[in-house]
Each structure stands twice: as C-alpha cells, then as structure tokens.
Length: 272
Image (cartoon, rainbow, N blue to C red; front, side, top):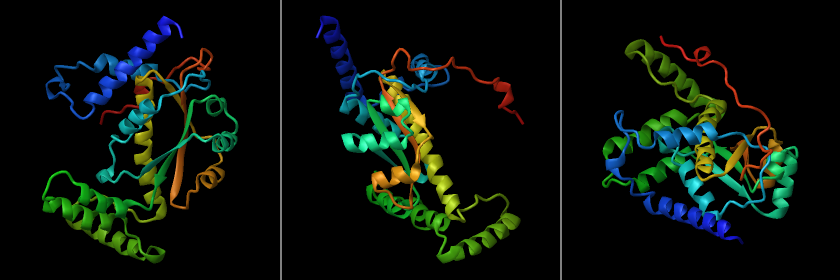
C-alpha cells in the first residue's frame, strides 16, 4: 500500500470515528435555523452528486460504514414510528449469484460491493405498536401515546375476515366526515396497507442512498427484478414486499451512463 493510500484510509477511518462518536450527541448549538445553515453546502453537494451508478469499482464498503448508513436510513420519517421496513444485505456468494440473476444480471448488481433488498412489511404494525410502548423513552408512557397505539392505530389497520371491519370503518368514516368535517381515511384493504408500508420504506431507502453518497460511495436503486424469485431466495412470505434492490459501491469512471437532467421545476410545482 502506498503512503497516499495509507493517508486516505486513515482519513476515512477518522471520519467514520467522528460520525460514530457524535451520532447520538448532536450539538444543539449547531442546529440549523433559517438564519444559520452550516450544513447546507454539504447537504446540497450530497444531493447533487448522487447518481444512479451502474458500474462500481472493486473497492469494498466497510461493515462499519454500511452499518452507519443503515442506521441513518432508519431515521427516515415514518407513520406513527411503526417502521415497516427491513433490509437484507446479500453477502453470501451463492445468494449473491442468485440475486444478481434475479436482477436480470444488471451491471449495477453484478459489479456492486454490496447488494441490498429493501423490503416493506404489511404484517408488523401490531407488533411494532406494542414495541413502541415497551421501548418508549419517556416513562411513564403518556396516556395519549398509549391511546394512540392501542386504539387509533388498531382502528386504522384492522380489516377483519373478508374485510368485514373495513365495511364498518367505511360507513363510520362517511358519517364522521358529514358531522365533523375532514378526517383521515383508515386502511380498508390489503392494497391500502401495502401502499402505506411501501411509501414509508421508500423514504428509508432514499436516506440509505444519500448516506452512502455522504460516505463517498454510490448506489443504484433497481426496480427491474423478479420479485417472486427474490422473495423465494430470501425466504420471504406474502406480507413481505421487495420495494427495490439497491446496488452499492464506489463509482467507476464509466459508472454513470448519461448526463443528468430534469424537467423544468414549474412543470411540477403548483402554488394554490
């Protein structure tokens, strides 16, 4: 190893140590405000330099870096803190070979240092609601928090056999709207719950990709894969949904295929 490589590795290790040391002790005096934005330049650089990279070098992603990126992924906003996500890091040689095949042998999968299945769960809302109450940091748990997880969340998700409860919920919701005004729609069908789980999980996936970029690595989210085959490989059931596959690694010189561009912002932003 050259002295230059040694210095680079030392710098990376020092940076990782700094991140890990301070991850639970954010300096409140350094918190951004509308008039004080110390992280803005670095944040914009992470966002603007992120690309969907299709070819990676042989540089590995250290386990501690990946673990930190996954920690940041799971700080994503999510409904009622129910965290309906899982991440399957496919490291074994045999599983990786099969997973790459399931990803249609895309270069982003074949050349990746790490290959990750991002999975949404539609069956864990009840267990996670109970876990929130067990692990809630403020003791005793406030009554309104208990009521939310034992009553409101249950009313939102329960559907009953052949959606029998959903029929009752739909009627009650229509009455409430007429009498009280706007009210959040509960989840009536399996597809409603699936949309909820995948929406929340996609937020965590974006955090993961941005965290990788901040650590100097890149990623490629892939929707082109054989989901039934991937679920079989990972031993997943009907309530597991592979939202995307993510290939990650160091960007190769030929890893970005096209010049980045977006349509004009005015096409999508509406002030009403």
